[in-house]
Length: 241
Image (cartoon, rainbow, N blue to C red; front, side, top):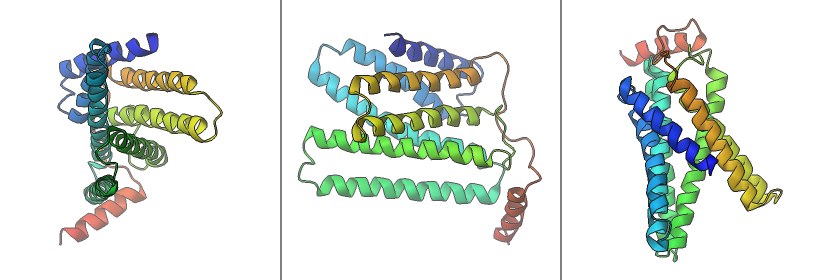
């Protein structure tokens, strides 16, 4: 029960703090995610005795959460490459290409299946999309760690905290799924418990960044003296010709 109610309370506090500090305008997608998840959990609590409406509300909400989670990745990447004209154009175009390709492939697989009108197939599509988003989030954390210093980012930036929380939870979720579904080293109840713990850790990371009274950095204040900054300048000048 504690693992269920703690993120609801903490995320509600984060929502209030973001509104108070006007950070909801800076990170609107992350704000939407942080507000939606606890609201969905409270709604499901009141629907727990109604099986069919609960099932529909859960999976409909899960699909929305997956879509917003993908949007958070886009938002974080935009903040990472915001000072870099060339990297911003390249990174965001690549993101949309990958996202559109993933959606198109999922739609083709879904409509081509003769089970496309059964609830189980819709659930499987949502789960597949969720795992794909988790993989992208884990990759984002790895790229962040590798390129942080070269992009003039520090652990004081809000976007870094958002990526760290999602990346840690995504890596844990994927690892636990592998241990339970394929290696059969842990039971399903253990998977649920550890997954809830991992999400609590992610929420704690976000709370560390957003709740304390001191303000963190929103954008990179100055371009770093690195190869990436030099390449960005050269390629940006070339594209503007």
